Image (cartoon, rainbow, N blue to C red; front, side, top):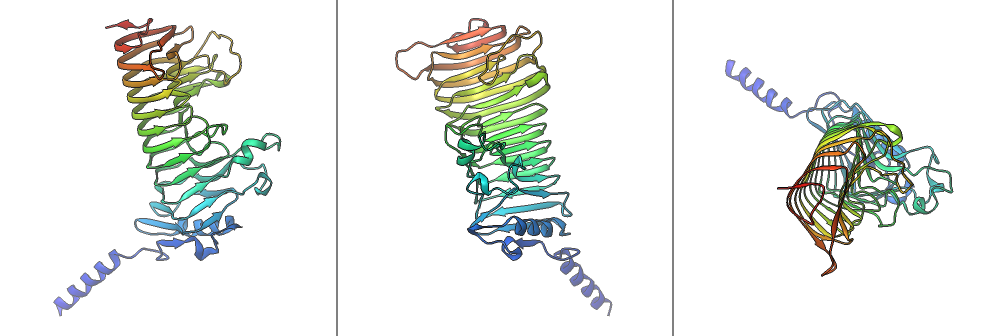
Length: 398
């Protein structure tokens, strides 16, 4: 009899260890909540109902919402947390599309973000599906309509986020925004928009720490990746950029802001036909600092400004020198090689306060036009260089 009770308890424990608690469900499908993937039906309400179900599911482990095959039209949607499970998984198998024209967006001109994830911990979003912002009408007509162009996808105050495997295309503005987040992993993405599409950055990061971006291809009309104020411990690895404006730290210090950025490391990245390669840009009159920044093992193909520090950045407007500026220090360039599409391959245009502790090692940049000479420009920059071509006159050669 004692053996019977022990066996019964053992079976009960094994069975319950595989169960979820509370409502018992851990897997959901958007179609169950009325989502129709015909590319025409507005699925905003259906997706919100599906999100409520997965976010409130009380499970051990991960609650999953599947977006099935098909094309799902969405107006601006906010996916809010916190959720009850430790991890929430949004698996995108189909394609999510924005309204085709500005006039079809609902509510019109009221949303600065199309797809917003806010206050969610342990969020996983992955492919192999696609997110299409259908931004062409916004690029041409957005300003005349009196509407501000929205970002396509934004993570706000979300910790321990994993985004991977998706195709992101044609955002009205920035494709992916990361703001106020900690512990973010972004990998294996393909982000694309036409070269002449305005402000369509691939990934914009602000106020965030411990962000890792890897193994992705980004080609847009603005920065492939922009690291803005309030960021630290940012690692960017194995990213191919082009077309676009390169990988940028900044812009920092706009409108006199105090911006701080530190521990940004860009490694094993390739730039193809970009306006810039690796760039740091700050506005005159700002304050704060950017320090401990490295660009290592960088490959350039016909890049217009392969290496650039611009402390007189004014977004195309005329700049005036200010008494204060964002302080730049501890900037390392190592193993940078390839071709420049312009005569000035290296630009260190620093403010009067100066850029300190620049270190260059094993730099080999030549002209993309055989036989043409290239050069470097220096203003208020100090540091050292080893095995650097072209010669950087303001740095001490070692």
